[in-house]
Image 1 (cartoon, helix red, strand yellow):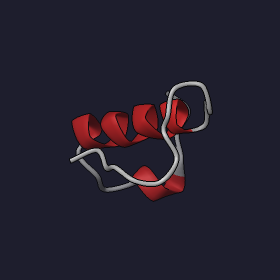
Image 2: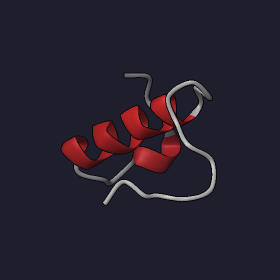
Image 3: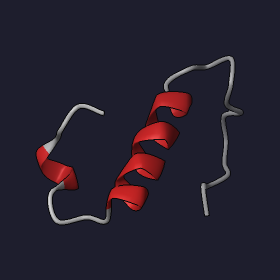
Amino acid sequence: MKSHNFFQGVNEDVALCVYGTRLIGRNADLVLHGGGNTS
């Protein structure tokens, strides 16, 4: 995973989850517009 300043001081597991969620969210074929969350 590429290091980003906004992950500094964050638990690595949480940072990887956020990173993966953002990658998936960039692909319009994998997401439904209009709601949902990753909780």
